Amino acid sequence: MKQRVISGAIIALVTVLAAYFGGIILKAILVFTAVWGSYEFISIRKSEFNIPLYAIMTISVLITYLFHDYREAVMLVEIIFLLSIAVFDERETFDDACSVFLMSMMLGNALYFMSYVQALNKWMFGYILIAVMLTDTFALFTGMKFGKHKLNERVSPKKTIEGFIGGWFFGGLISFIWACIFKFFGYPAMIFIASSLILPVVSQIGDLVFSLIKRHYGAKDFSNLIPGHGGILDRLDSNIFSIILFGALMILFG
View (cartoon, rainbow, N blue to C red):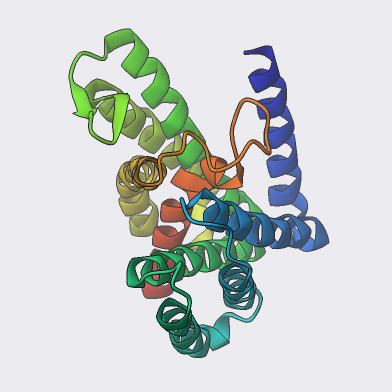
């Protein structure tokens, strides 16, 4: 537990610094996340580590993040390469190609929107972090205190409906108060009314999705990079869905 607390404090400090200063600090962290997150996903699969798959996923994630205007072209080329590997490499299947493509698109777009939102307004980036972290925190403590009904035992045996509701309520409320303090960062209030209602739900669904992925591959964590916490993808699970949804809301209504 002590190790987990220390690691958590370091993660929180690095996250705050990256969110506040942005620039080269944030870019370095996101590039590392792209490279290591791709490694974690390729490694977690039951088959032997496949270097071509890793290279394709890493390049796709990095280009989607750093050169987002070319993401459609990247998607098309990646599909061709991944399916070609599935055809000519007997270790890989159509399902493997699809899973790598899906994860690379999720990770690449999440990293892009992290950079995009931080560049728009660092306090708005903090809004997303608060929504996700407080949802996760209150879901944990509410579930421990009041949890009686399992949320989805097949995917995550410890999560409860009570914890889900508690995380949604407090994560949404506190993040909305944060947005009010900063006068909605100069954007229409409806964006933050909607996102404060939706982000805590999507955040917890993201957590469940990544738990489902780990169960599918028979793994407890994506890696042991962070003592007591697992890997990069273990820490990003809730954030990935939330930041993509918020980025979509900003593009549509911002």
